Length: 149
Image (cartoon, rainbow, N blue to C red; front, side, top):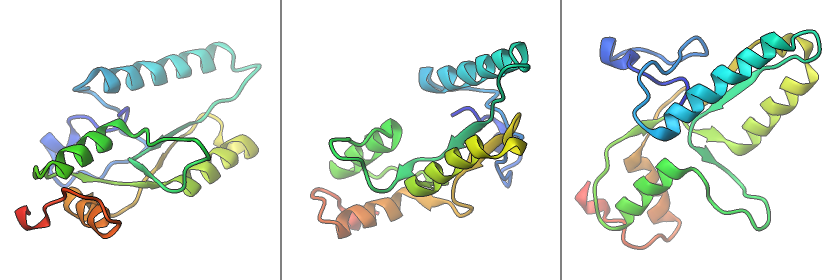
C-alpha cells in the first residue's frame, strides 16, 4: 500500500521495488500506510542518534496462522468473499509467505546494515485472483464458480 502507486499507469511493464513509493493512494488504507511510513522516517531522522529503523513492505500474506488468529489481509479477503459469491474479480498480486516475512523482520533487527533501508517482501511472480480461486476451490471452499472464469 505504501509502495504501489501510479508507476504502472506510466509504464505497464514497471517492476515494483523498494525505491517505489505510492504517489497516488486510492484508499484510506493506502493513505494511512503512506503517512505512517513517512512519520517513521521523520522520527528515524529526529532520533537517529538513539535508534535505527528499517521498514518492511509485503504483499497479500499467506501462511500458517497463530492459534486464535484470524485472516486479516482485508483487500484479498474482500476479493475472496466476492469470488465465493460467484463474481469474477481479475487482479494480480505479488504474494508473501508468512514465514518469509517473519524471517525478514528478524534479520532487520539483527543486522546493522538494515538500518535506513526499505525492504519489499513479495513473490517475483504475480499470482492471479483466478489462481487464488483455484486454491480456494481445491481447499474445499464453496461458492467458487471456476466455470465463470
